[in-house]
Length: 245
Image (cartoon, rainbow, N blue to C red):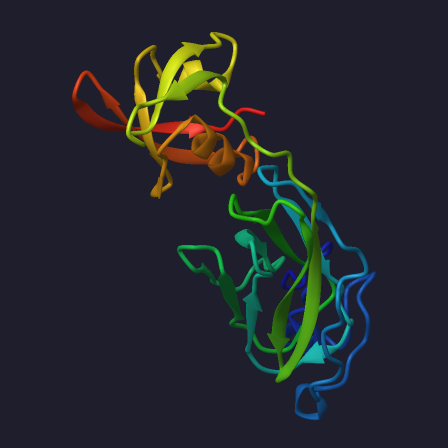
């Protein structure tokens, strides 16, 4: 929402009332002492599809066109397996600070103006997290405003099981998966895997053989990033690996 100008979305009522009217395109409103909080948020009309990994999608909360006479606070909870990356309350000409949790699980913003109209959508950009279930599914978050909580929903698409971008063999005694070949055109090569590396873990999960590596990667979505523990020439190290298909 934007404080009133010729093309604004949040009207600065005080000055307009003193002038005895509103600029063209604005909607006449009651005097400030007669203003009452009206309406409540409604859920978004569309459900975005999120890929994991994938780009952010925007969820829009439609305005109600009602007049508010005092500052307001909006709280947003992200659906499970998603992360809020941006919130746009459409403020202009007044302070509307936005706060997003470090992990993106929640966000809030304050509308620090008086006598304003909610006339533009609030926009929330959200992405699916790498740990989204392989099967995908529909997940629900919340938005709370003026004591009313409404749900908003996203659809996370089905994922593609991951695989190692090369060939591995068993290390005797359950010691891991030994790299035998890395496809130079795949992500495994870009991550820095080399012939004779021994893979011992993926995101903290132990790898004891070639089959256990395949099982761990197949349970993760291709395209997501994993921390892979390896031993190279007797030295332990960790590679950041964008998992191949």
